[in-house]
Amino acid sequence: MKKFLSLVLALVMTMSLVTVSAGAKDFTDSDKIQYTEAVDVMSAVNVISGYAEGDFRPSTTLTRGAAAKIICNLILGPTTANALVAKTAPYKDVPANHTFAGYIAYCQKEGIISGYADGTFKPANSLTGYAFMKMLLGALGYKADVEGYTSPNWSINVAKQAINAGLNKGLKGDFNGVKAVNREEACLYAFNTLKATMVEYDTTITIGGVTVAGARKDVTNNASIETIKNDDKMQFAEKYFTDLKLYTKNMTDDFGRPANQWKVKSKEVGTYAKTPDLTYTDEVKGKTVYADLGKGKIDHEDIELVVNGAPETDSLDSAFALNKNSDKKVGGKGTLTEVYFEENGDDKTVTIVEIETYLAQVNGDYDKDDEELDIAFEEKNAPS
Image (cartoon, rainbow, N blue to C red; front, top):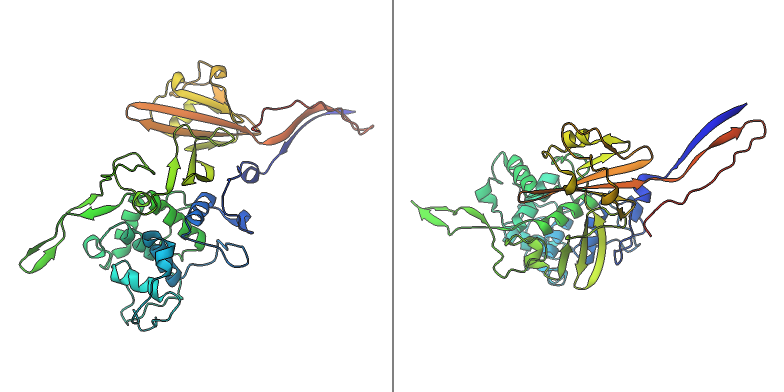
């Protein structure tokens, strides 16, 4: 008796689709890090570091004292920050010789942090997502007293502005501001701060003895040093990390996915695929992608298909488009299909990336009695 056998040998997607980042910091527990791009970049600019044992410990809770150090490393650079000292105790539980005293004193002086009502800072305690976001917003120039960070509803105000500034971008799951921040989440939030636009306030005025700050506005990049984003605005890294550069134009990873490439001076930190707008693991119709994307009609000529790193626009069915009537399909079983949307003015472009996530596809007649199966392998295109 013969039975037809169809076998797909699947790879573990999260492992097989990772590209090697040249020059990135190698931690012994790198396989446990979710936010690789953030940790690599923050490590490359020496804002964060691992432990003496060579690991990073991504899930370890961040302390309030360590958070102050990250802020100082961001604003001052690690060399200057490391030289900070506190002449007097900034808080009654932070003596001048405390490990984090210099960092805490600086952040207190700049109005970036505040202690508790009893005069303590509790440097060894964990801090919430709200508290760390508040510190990062302070580094970007947001004034706590003006923005309502000292009011009873301070956490709501912080969350609104932090999310608006993109500080939680790339976070897996929803932002939970009450939850204690761990080390890799802190890296992600700090990494997003590098790409965020700084703010400033118009000249303050005094009315009836009350000082009122002027309107908040984005800082202009007068020097036109657009190392992060070409928008004539000052991103945090464009002011404080001028050697750090982000490349995105025509940049792809080995699988053809739109990507970010980071360099410190001429040394590459790594190339990292952007987050897709849509992901499918089976064949999908154009009208389904159209509805899921929610970006309006996309004509055929504005769609690029990349299969295993090789552009195949010419082989894309000319009838395939993203509209409510398109029944043409892309993808399939054993194929990871990612959709990336880009908009520049009135121009809309979509990149569809197909990655075959199996080692081999076997079809043949299996003889149960002889326990034999003849297999012929066909070589598939794959990134080198």
